[in-house]
Image (tube, rainbow, N blue to C red; front, top):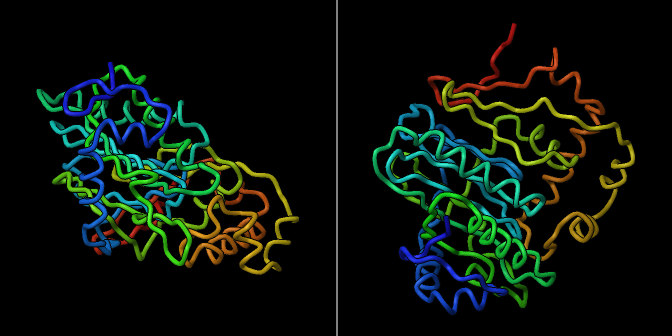
Length: 307
């Protein structure tokens, strides 16, 4: 079944400009969303999603109140929620495999909504901007087309993407909203920033940096974050980047050098150092088992000791 806007099937368009011209209320909704206050989310209630990750949970989860993700420039943050069950999935998509990823998000939510007697699937898309290479534009259209192909009725509620998430600062285009959070208890979606991006931030970044595909990182039935096991090959050549200046790293390792957040270069360097310290990931996953984390009573993530 189709992707719906105001209960009507959307029409395929070849550009985002054409799409928004057909649905002007989405422009107003996007302006309203961009005008919302930026929330600094408390790490003790947060489940953070990195690039090429997704997580799903329900309002019954006693350990997670907010799922969030940020640092999206050309990337898009994809939120699917069932209004009956409250099951909520947040994904951070970079266009690496959109057509195979979207069905994963929908299935994750519908699986947790099988007992819901009513409600509907709602979609919120946030991210991208008017970048020179049109990377955002392409990802926006691919996401819309992929959701259009899903079997379920999915209602597009928020569409704050590409030109609707664009601002010009000092002559350079950049996103207005880089990150979002969703309150899984209420369904509220809001612009957000995150002082903590754990657990296992460097390991998760290394997985993505070395080509890891979209991964589900949370088991809501056990309230555990699950990472890996990951696979990468030793590559001492990446040490080269640690000697380069910020401009060079931005030019060659970013899809949007003029729009990255201030900590981008430091994040890249810490990821490279992690990979140089762990040329083979085997030692990080004893027995070939994933790393598991659970939340303590104090709200921190702690590693689960496995037999």
